[in-house]
Amino acid sequence: MKVKHQEHKRIIISGGGTGGHVFPAIAIADALCSELEDPRILFVGAMGRMEMEKVPQAGYEIIGLPVEGFRRKLSLDNIRVVIRLITSLRMAGRVIREFKPDAVVGVGGYASGPVLRKAAGMGIPTLLQEQNSYAGITNRLLAKKARKICVAYEGMEKYFPHGKIVLAGNPVRREIRELGQAGDNATARKAFQLDSGSRVLLVLGGSLGARTINEAVRHGLDLILRQPDISLIWQCGKSYYNEAREFIAGRSAERIILRDFISRMDLAYLVADAIVSRAGAITISELCHAAKPVILVPSPNVAEDHQTKNAQHLVKHSAALYIPDNEAVGSMIKQAVELLGNEDQRRELSGNIAKLALPDSAGVIAREIVSMLKG
Image (cartoon, rainbow, N blue to C red; front, side, top):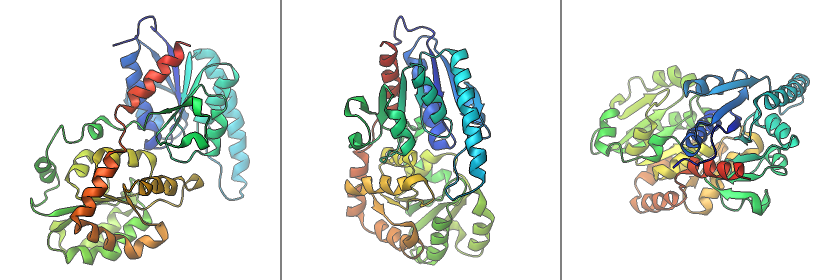
């Protein structure tokens, strides 16, 4: 039911850079359209990033800022980054003055900082979405002036004021949220041309390709092939596809399903008996909805090592297994095969990770924004 007397509210949603920021932002916008009467929603993203393509495809307007991330190592490139940040702050101020938003929402990513900082400085209510179990320095600074902070994990009081926190979870794609409703296991197996009796290991190397995970598969592939009832769905990423295809040539290809990208991730989750994945915030939220046993191999190449902290949160709840990146090549496939052979452990992990799923996250966040609009 749409809220009366909340017609034509103007809202900026800022952030992006990766699918983990962009798709939840779009889900929040869609939920706002269900909660409000004819809202005007404007996205502000970073020039050249994926939001500049994906947001218009979803039917929303977007403006790009020239902002980019700082280099971790000392580099002259950071001089350019500072200049672009200053330019982005000025542009953000101009966008806010011209659009006149009633509220501004930050979902993380390069553009989120300048826009939320300017909005808060101009007295406009802001809501911050923190996706990870560890809050980075930018969000901790922005939180000081935010009206509400929607988080995905319990215990975030160590980073944010308790009174501002709303446990909302991370919005995930509808087909993941409704996993199991749209199709059964047989449909999923047919999509991947899998035998009905095989156990399935799903290895997710990311859309670009995670080198360590892919190397671990190569290292342990013969072990998988020695198990006559195990099939492998290996999503290796575009960068590694040709190399991986050459590597598996001549092996038992009927039990190795190689993909550079999986468009129907819901079917992949549905058919999997065990999953190996990185530990990005949105990926973990999807895995909670999938309710499958998972081995997490956090990427070490992320800000403030937040993927390791995400993984450790699940391990603390006995909801996942964890392998450090520097140990994965030697042990990842061995542990995955052992997990596939241990039904009791798989059942325990599945049950525990399912308990961490938070349904209707986008709706919860949208209703917090509506509440904020009421003052």
